[in-house]
Amino acid sequence: MSAAATGRDQPLLSVRDLAVHFGISKGFLFSRSIGAVRAVDGVSFDIGRGETVGLVGESGCGKSTTGRAIARLNRPTAGSIRLDGQDLSTLEGAALRRVRRRLQMIFQDPYSSLNPRMAIGAIIGEPLEIHGVGTTRERAERVRELLAIVGLPRQAADRYPHQFSGGQRQRVGIARALALNPELIVADEPISALDVSIQAQILNLLARLQRDFRLTYLFIAHDLAAVRHISDRILVMYLGRIVESAPSAELYRRPLHPYTVALLSAVPLPDPAAEATRRRIVLRGDVPSPAAPPPGCPFHTRCWLRERLGNPGECTSAAPPLRTVGGGHSVACHFSDAVAETRVNGAGAATAPPAGRPPAG
Image (cartoon, rainbow, N blue to C red; front, side, top):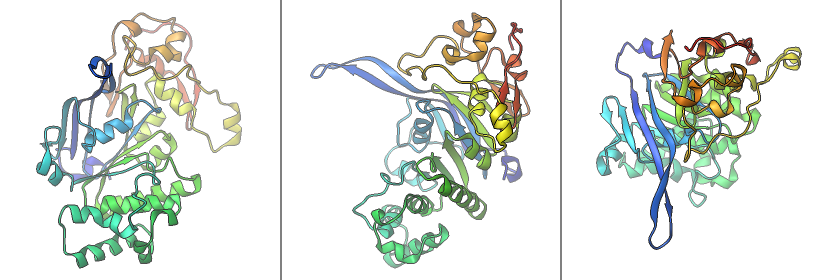
């Protein structure tokens, strides 16, 4: 369901200029600050009611830190996080606890996110107990109902996490997130730790739950094929910033940032003939350290397009703003017009644009 279909103008979640920095200290007894890791550095986006927004990028780009900041598991350094108009970034104590009933999180690793000393029923029922929802009997009935919703037997309530497979444990995590009937769920790479055969089952379960309970998702992942399957809109993140944002179909049809093109070129194609003939764009090196980001465009140290254009100075002198180019499509690249000439075949077979330097976009 798209945000427009809800008939409401105000987004459910509105993030503006979100920054999460972690200080770097030197010394033991008399430690002093020597810098900061800029894990998230000025991120802004909206999520409409009933919408699924995918957040993608390589490891170390700040995706999980963004999700944890929205859920207030990490304290924002700057910016605002508004849930239905209420700013979460300044809430503490009981006020924050009340809001958390509306916003829950599914964690990446189903092995470490469940307490091995607690039975499944106690794990799922813990949010109900913390928030004082219902009597003991009502909570037990709610746990049985949630187990059925996620496709687990009622008898699972008396068993322990080590007695379940990874996919079953993730279903337990999903049931726990649903316990308080939240409006927004932050899913932090919920399928990356699972076998490929199980990933589709979890994605289909999340899609069904969204339809049944009118949920809104921020779906964090590095697998663009999975994001395409479930997302209405996709945000591409690099080194703590959003570098491209577009509706899912539009992003796959016409990527405008060289980083997005490179990510799409790594997505496997189902056609063996096309897979054998396409050219991949292999990025050199690793993501730069967020403690010492490069000047100018954060992607310029690995950008294949910059090399093809003769290393233009704009890329190192000024960071490109995230600008709208139409149709809900935004991009942060000085030379997005040149990227637009890149042809993407299927799920990412890319042919680079011709050499020569175009005017800045």
